[in-house]
Image 1 (cartoon, rainbow, N blue to C red):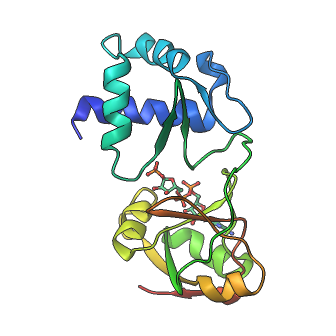
Image 2: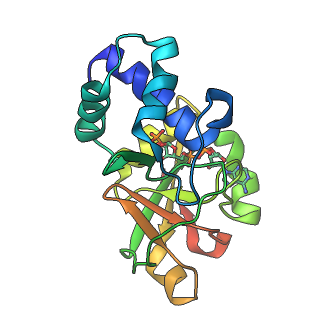
Length: 180
Ligand code: HQG
């Protein structure tokens, strides 16, 4: 993605996941807002943004971060603001991965993965994705292997808002193992 589009996408994520109010955007309970209100907010920092640019960002997004339905848009995952998840739980693959910082490890191995600032714990189907998630926190991240199918069998619901992201409310330490 072009650098300028990446900056706009970061701002979209900030508005749609975390701080809609600060940008004069109102989300409905499913996390949607009018595309037009998002564009108005984006234009304050990036005056050249229009609907075509936002649609290109959404369609080109490699992680499926956003969804447009009619004239409304939302983030598919990553929220800290309360949104209702309109998704059925799915059966996850046998293993999923979570990349994190070395400093978070002791606490994670003690209390499990918690959503912390977000609504859900985020898990990746591939080690590569988990590595890049982890690098946001630590240049030498730790990869945790999550025995997802077993966790699911024990009653923990999993959701898949986009191809490359699974969500769960909490992963107890018994399902975790350090992978690297
Ligand atoms: C850690 C981005 C201490 C957790 C990414 C993580 C992802 C604990 C940090 C998505 C803990 C929270 C989410 C515990 C978890 N004690 N630390 N018990 N349980 N943690 O950013 O998963 O690319 O909220 O390991 O790519 O890093 O922007 O979560 O290090 O998909 O689309 O607490 O956000 O999506 O950090 O990232 P975050 P995350 P985008």
